[in-house]
Length: 142
Image (cartoon, rainbow, N blue to C red; front, side):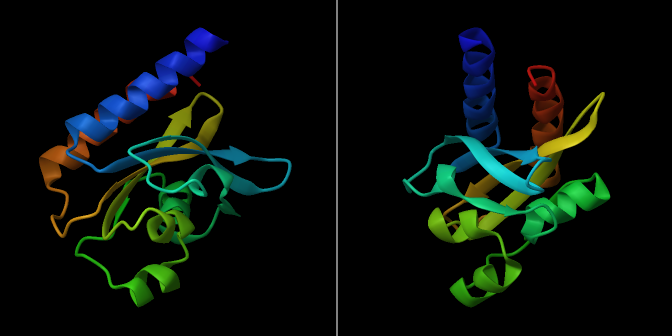
């Protein structure tokens, strides 16, 4: 079990580093309570992030889960816009730019990777593509 957790933690850190992100988090769907739980984070500045539970339909993560495709903020958002979006991790981690990638296994979509930046620099197509490839690699550990 520790080897699997180490592989997941290493994969999250690699995602954060290779996409130039300040934050990378793994949210897994808990089907019993129908919520997304944040279970791993790299680059976190908030003690509350791993305590967050949110509806699987909320925010960027919900958009990625529903569509099965990446979801992004595009441009930097104000505090009010981040609040309206309904993605509590963006507020807790003070992220202005975010990218959410669905994690798909043979069981279907089991969660998301949330990448974020505390700067105003948007994600480019190459970074999104790299995040997608690394997310697929990470899915093998779940």
